[in-house]
Length: 249
Length: 249
Image: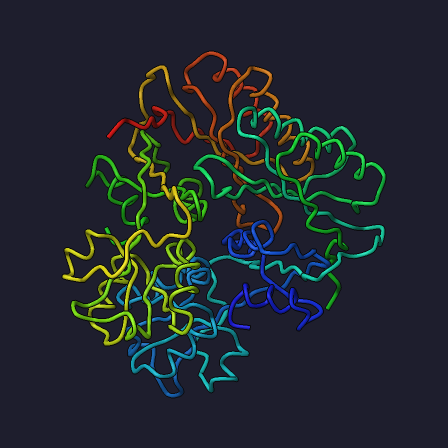
């Protein structure tokens, strides 16, 4: 699929059973498009699983091209954020041009003289590009967390995580955020993430995206959620799903 | 300046007394580059002021060009997020190409046959473009908040705001975030924003960016900050500055 919106539409229409979308990178942070689709999307889909994938960026060129001949670098803005140091150090004079995806960057590079692109090993294979440098991201580990979207979330497994989205009526919001978080901390429920997104109605009004440990059907969490919901102007459980665990390769 | 990094460098080097950078848009949310420069930047600058500006997007073309002839639209990704509905509704078949800034989008459009760009009225004047449509953002009001960066922050004015950044040692972070927020709520200090950015060290570890009402030298806030700081592995007051107030036009 060309865009995250298209992935969501494919699941929503039944064309696909599950869709995978990036939600967070360890260097660049959240992927706003995915967060907004979860909160503002036409019909709510559930998060059914999460996957954490190490990211390795490569400098790709047309076969035979030399480093000195690189005048333009095609790169997706999220990737640019992860490789800015490399570009400033090694290609201070090159022009950086934004591409709409990592794949699009490689495709454009292949059709433009004197250019390079930042992309994956797989893209190099697909488009017949040559890898000039590998592991060019500014910091390691560089990992991206993906979520699996489906019509229903996951049954309890005993090591789960639950994502919720909530908002408060504007008047007394600040105390209420603390009040909601206290419902978790008082029950020893671990909070693994809190993020705010604009409500899109007025500057300074937010929807909070919160990840906590446990399944929404586990009794302490179910109780906390019920208590929080009554104080919210908007409340949605985005899904409960197994917490990602790294497995030995 | 071509980039936000360059704005920061200009202030840092003394070339400029103050620099203005966008920090948050009411539709698209935070500007990650600005947040990261505040937290991870080489030398800390202070936030000295904030400005809120209404944003109006326009569809620009080369003079004489017709709507039907638009095959390609150049747009900055942040702007694309604000005008996605318009593009999907009015130009479902056009190819969208990312540009590194709104100005760059207009510049590229002027040199490419069959293209349009999304940009400001000012950019239309500078590059000699024609405005085909105006107010094409998906929602109104669409406003962007900018911060004024300087070497020192602002003296107290009686209606101030303070921005801080903090992080906790990983082990018992969740309870600690709630603990920190309680220091504010117990003193009736209004929290106007909480945002998390990746620590860039490990997925799932964050730096929290918090805006509260008051000046860092006001006694209840000063006390709360002192209490919070002792529990943090990273703590920085980004600055105290007058809260933006809309003035009648």
